[in-house]
Length: 162
Image (cartoon, rainbow, N blue to C red; front, side, top):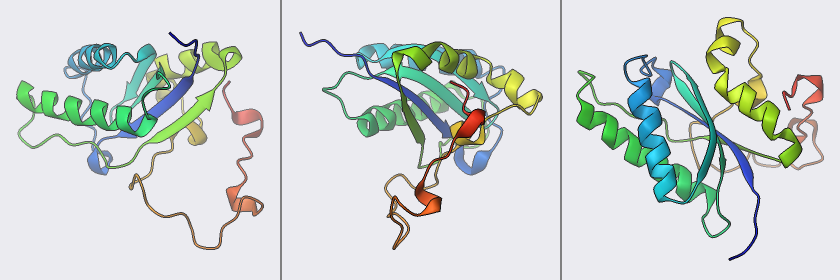
């Protein structure tokens, strides 16, 4: 077996950012995501949420693509939520997601940020960088944008929580 340590902070939102992640739904959602992650051999270090999105801090084995894992977690969990019958409408996740890589030294702060999502949102101390998701998973990049242009440089400054 190969040795690996990969850490990802993944965030995705409910469709149209509807506030569907209720206190009633939360334990079912967390348990399901933990079980599905275990099935995929993904290690979950932390889960946190606000009413319209969820964060996971995970290690994904190198044999699996991040996009594939996120797709499976989102698809399976939305199907599972539908079977619970908690909503009068169909539960859906947005199409996109945000994913951020980090190192071992950043893991503790990342875990705290993910676990304390409710506090961060209530106190308005979220980091916009780490709350970012995109409506389209595989949308094309902005035409003409290069990594040397200011919009493409990720200046996280002192606001980065890790």
